[in-house]
Image 1 (tube, rainbow, N blue to C red):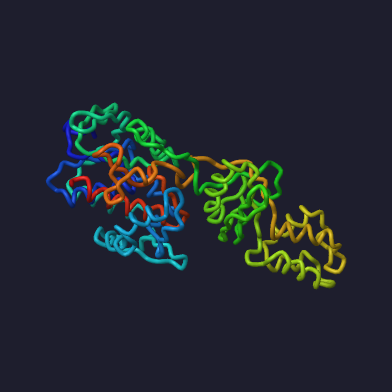
Image 2 (cartoon, rainbow, N blue to C red):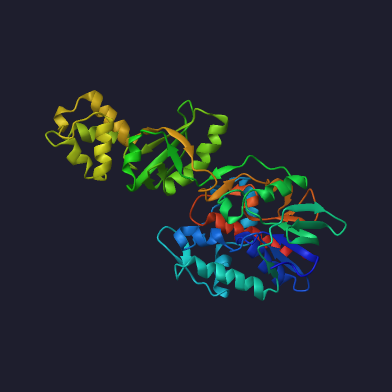
Length: 412
């Protein structure tokens, strides 16, 4: 569809999570205004539909502003407080989507269907009286006498207020290819360094872990500076793949690893395949094995394929008994199990990243309204802002909270 008029009070560019939220609240709070929502996708909501393995992790029971990166914690907290988790749960209940909390603290729709979340949001947009048009990709944004003019192959539209809810660069096939960041720059905003976040990591060819594709286990990944200083660690499910590593622990630490590598190229990661077990503890356990085979002992705690790979990595005969294990080989095995250095060669890029790190810093926005301090009448919400969180629904919560603030503010 194409817009049926060349003017609107407010144009929202991007019908992802934040854009849909902004549209719903703009329509609800300002029914007298003409609100138009534009998106370039033929099928809307790609990120919502793939989130949480198709179940859509809507939010988390505990959303701590300190777990987000990018802009300051105080600034992020100010926005999150405006529309918190209980309000999010009630909002979706009103839309007909009941949420359930799992043991991890993640909240999913009780139907386990991301489609139900998207359909509810689209219904909310329609009921709020917002005009939604797609595919209507916006290619240009410029200041005009009315305020702003947006253009694309479909035509042009002038508006008094403009909302950029275009996302960042992650999952570009969904439409978030960085165009919105270019719009923000063109209108006078700065954009911090952007890079993939929550992204799988690629290991160098020949790494034994590559032969463990499909093995999943809990592990602790630790980030170190080039001098060996510990920076941050994440413990969670870890997936070995044909290209390297993925899973929650890897996705969470990827943001900090890629960020640190930009200023400290020698920064590196280590993995403890026995989370909670210190090197000294494992060393003592191996020394006390006596005639028990090392392989048999390790297989009590780790997947069999992982054990065999670790023994091979250390050049250990699988039949080696504890009392025949030399000090040198024992130390090598301890390090391979509890502090194995990972030769990370790269990451899978924006195509596989769940979110973008970097964006427009919150210091350039009025936090009460998320309106630009640079260009009056311009609003930003969602992933285009320099705010990104770990897995577990925190990035969606930022979308709901920031979209709410913008939606309530555009008519004022």
